[in-house]
Length: 212
Length: 212
Image 1 (cartoon, each protein chain N blue to C red):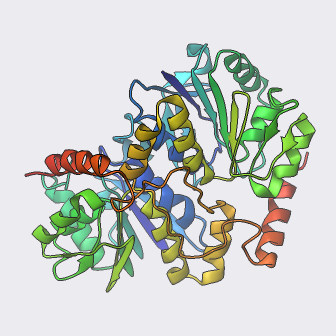
Image 2 (cartoon, rainbow over the protein chains, first blue to last red):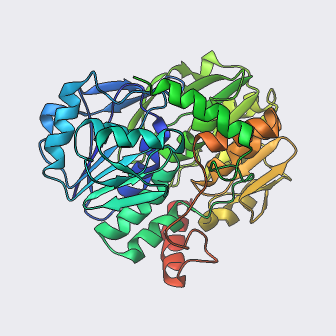
């Protein structure tokens, strides 16, 4: 089972590492970390660098493709080589997946037309631009495309996907292994729960970043 | 506010990246990623490499120190230089923190004697070896030491710490930013909830790894 994680400059580290921590542990998983060019990638997470071992040209097929998001507003529209690669790999996958604004990148690559999808809550409406149907859920599955909501939703999505790829008991074992029995100390993780002024200011900031 | 993340070979990537994604966003945060020697560190998460920009000798003080865990059984007991550094930095911190079996490393460095602490559920009892009081909670604060339970508990701990370092509203804004409104698809994230055979086999596997 070939699981491919796309790395790119300024991606959000947790978008990728959450699902990575779960999916690499699946029986039979072969994980590939791929960037436009192999080497260190600087994330938007305080410039933390992580290394991609493969270049786009090394990978022509995937059973699972995962595309993380970036809070800086990129949809990789200035990186046609990456967008074309995503589109080509998608033709070969069992599952094509994204976390957070990674769904806008899937959209820009042309593969969300007519599909239900989700994204970070603050920019969910931007999916319409790519012909997708913005859907307010933490995990959205439509055909072979699974999109997750903002950043931390990648963990929930990966457990869901783990069960689809193998069996429920394996996913439950992985959940136990990472002790994922969440107890957030506050109750402000969604725009329906957080203080309205927090929601308004964050929406404004992210919407501005994702303006064309 | 100087926030220092310890990197070491075979650490669990998510133990570190969960809190990192939250804490680097705090107003005034200056983040330092430090390893025995600066450079790429190979995590236990499918050999994913992340880069530490600083060596131990570069860092002599921290407001916050975070030590991640490793599922391979290491307590860094064969790395006295790192353990001594942890002990020395601890003398300078406002908060010394760990995720998962990182608490066993804090223990090995000699700073948990007489303190309540937690760890990954499967090896919680090992804390006694270091004079700590094993405590079954997701986040345990005793004096200036905050320990978190297994892997994903680092996210909860970091939000709790964010509020202690700044104010609750800022922590709530960060929770909203990473859309941390968890919806695990299964209910097996703790030994009290998971199937007994999953609990037994994982406990056996981890206990063996952490045997002396």
